[in-house]
Image (cartoon, rainbow, N blue to C red; front, side, top):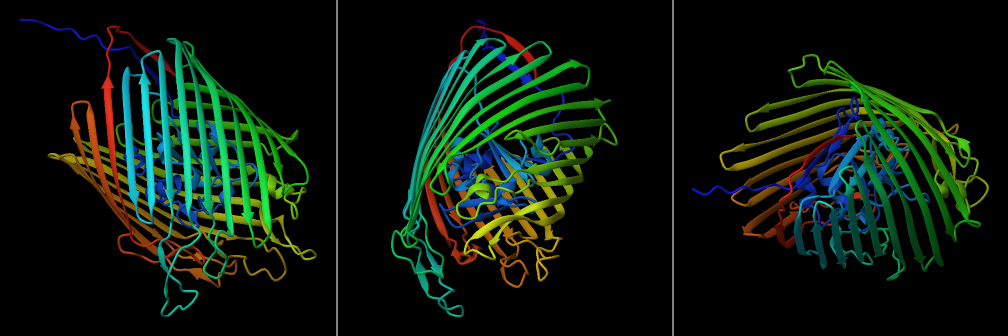
Length: 632
């Protein structure tokens, strides 16, 4: 008898003793959803996976979010710990973020965003890429063909070992985006069918990541994201504009380098980077041809100490410098942001978890509001899956550079938007054999003062921003996620529901009709439901999204009707030794629902896509055996 011995590669495990999100609401987008939508953009992933309302002007057009009734500028988008919201409008365009460049996505609702950055009065979206330290060679190529003359090509190459890793991702997508729609502006009772024009777009991108381990406690890494975006901007149904009238062209480069250092009872993470973007916007009718150049340098350091039992102490510093040269500003504008924060997570007998964070920022050498946050989670019975949680926090949002300096109309005297947030809820987990259930219910209350609003100037003929509104948003969120196995069948079910009441509680003027009314483009009810089944290499997914009425006027006299979209996809995977072949077919909006997310901006009806993916995966083993465990 012959015995073979296989010595496995070195394994290093980095784990956290305590959860720094205890007491807060954090939603992890399922990795299978990320894989399913990897040929799409962030707006489509968020719409398909959460009840968050995505304010989209159509496929390939501007897409932003409203979380808990807050505005688009109140959602902070983080990429590997770096805020990628543009300091100019103060927001991110989700249509310009490819899902193919994402390995992990999390939603931090409300005050949970303070652990990453300020300004997330609604919340933050964290996007991450992960380094796989296995010895391997993996290559993949994917080609998608879709309706409206849309194509997407992507490729990825991962290669490395325990000491060095390289990951390269490339994608190219283009679309004529010439879908049919019913023109209700021409005739509401019997609308003619028109074709969307001047809506084409294309995107090209590269993501390169490198990582080195100099020893068992030190890792160096670098990430570079390059992308070019070109799109035509179509007019709404009410406007008849000439072909090619409006469009934008953007080039961006994002690069960060960092080091992760682990000690016996502590860890230190330091990173620095440079963000650059160039955008040209044209509108022939308005005779606009403007260039905007933005350069930002970002640096951060986070230190975690775990030398005490059941206690983790965190401290950190952030420094950001922004420089903008714009045809819409009178000269070059600069902004400097410095933030210092400290936090502590403490566990009491595995039943209560306390979470405290304090944050202080300086913006152009002026102190911003002090932002403390406190959360608590409690298990009534240790062996039960029931967890009660609550938190209270203060947060603020500085005016964007457009708010301050846009010419004409900018208001340099604007104050910070600020407010208090309150949350309470419960979470329940159940595991029985191959069945797993996670459910959460959260109630929230946000009071935001000095809400910035643009309105026509009473003297001049342009719009200008002011600190006018006091907004109170309150509501409830329900989340149910279950999965299991029945014989050879794997299944999953997800239900996400959000009820949001967001009202202006302070009159802007004597005749203000918006007091006590729902904010425009904030649906009170939204639902997301996913059903998935997998067997014999087949995966079938059904997604339903319901978006309630959205008012389009501040006095709530006009609204867009509620709508429901339903999507279906099916894929088949075939594994032959080191090769995997995957064929996926999808029908989006298969009921051919005619709807608008934004008034007079038609959305596509029923549409199709088919994609073919090939993956070559070669795992290599060496004969070193070493296991190390670090906490962070």
